[in-house]
View 1 (cartoon, helix red, strand yellow):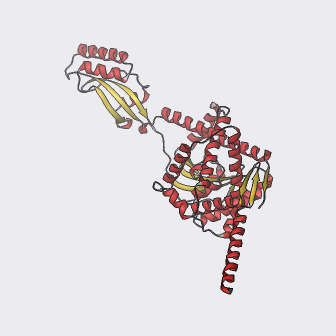
View 2: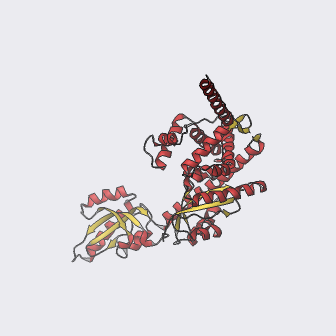
View 3: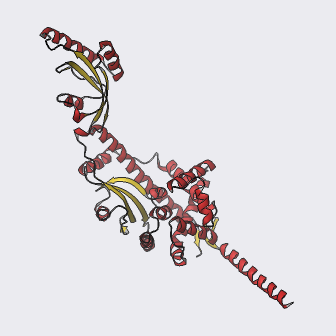
Length: 421
């Protein structure tokens, strides 16, 4: 009888503990307008952050990171609420595509993400909510600002002049974590967080995973990756910090006007120099043979024929047709040729020819040639056009990122947010 009583007592104590744990997990961590973030939600997201960044699941580390993870969850709720207000939806197909991309970025096989979540005891819900917020927020920001942001030619010219001044300097492949300081009140919070993240990275935790979880720049979704940049592009303070690093190295937190940055140097390469010798062209040629003992009259007649054909040809296709009419085996498509391998004066002619315009007839030992440039790669003109477009896109993305952060800040300031832990 006593044994049965002890068993009943043990079961009662166990039931009380289970109920206590369940109640604890259902405690409210924060209220965001009409939505609730539970302690369970916070614990799940903390577990996801720590597992993806390969952090040791230490209670003290969890405690230190909890305020910023909760801030991220609050922002997530605000984004989803704004999406609902604006009737912005995310399809299941888009979520599935994002999950597939996540698997590929992390070199996981198909279904590997599910296995990873299963191993750490988490469901897909937290991850799906995060993806839905990211996609809907990108759509909201695009709808709101794509048509209002302008980048002027003067701004592009100014940046292009900076690029030219930095031509030949080393190029850096970089990833970033940005923790913006939006008010004097959150200065200390961002400083503490930047130091904690730096400590986590120094301890071997994944920079990319921490960037995805904590960075507030547009590059966060890509693990902080911002691609190749030229030395001198980020400003002296950041350049000096990166100059001291070997590939794989990480800067300490750096305070800028925007907030705290942490950069990772992924790779470094020599800067490309743009010279005439870098130019590769696709050429068409007309060739009119002349015997070595041709008379002056014969040469003059054939030069006139070549000049007439040069004027007639208005495209590379017309050059091909004229070459067939000549029935000369040396006429036709010469393929892609490096300009520095061409003989003078053909080299200078090719460098100065506009696309799809036949050049003047030129005499050589075997006859008369007329050339046309169909494509040009690596020219100063082509490079400048590409640089202008790259600069325009970069400035546009920067302004869109700033506008998005202001939008979110306004949502925070107008929302009812009650943090309870």
